[in-house]
Image (cartoon, rainbow, N blue to C red; front, top):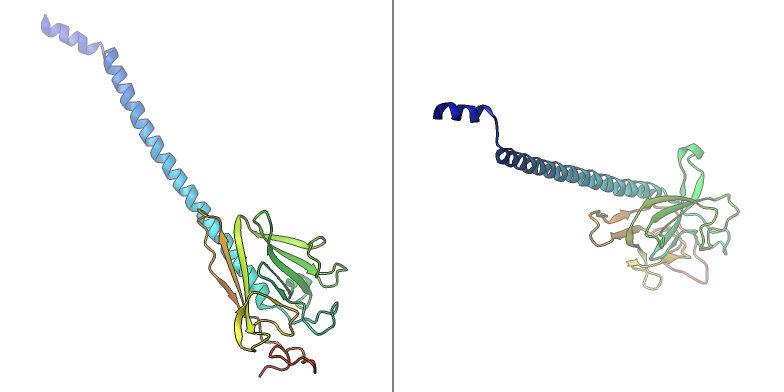
Length: 226
């Protein structure tokens, strides 16, 4: 009789308590698996975003190096004709460079690189045949190419002969000069906690003939290079 009763209980299946325990264990395992999958998905998404961000930085550097390598020493016809259109300031830089092949290898554009108040690093382009005066501070009429977002600060420095000593040195400004700087350095920093990194960009413009010196103003920044 006792054996028959045990057999009947076994055939009846799980008790309510056993079913609840099984459901709890199953729910716990499912939650653990879901957590692992979620963490894995977040890690993969973070990695993809990091790779995309690094690619964007590399793309911006390659584009700037390409334009800056090809910059030209162009006389500022809007001035007295004794200086170039290159204007280097601590927070922005203006220079002339050939545009893309679609408009011809000799079609010059005036470029301006600067950080906007919203944190965007933007490269502006203005056709040299445009009626817009590039010397104005605004960028109305310019074509804007956003390069990077959430930029905290950017710094431009210029290497070449000092106006007073004639010795080559890094300088914060380079404007109303009769030659291009020998080197241009672009430093950039992102906001705290931003995983992106900007390797220091150093560009050496191609050597070009300097404007002749004025009789009343002889400096190392004019005349044929020694």
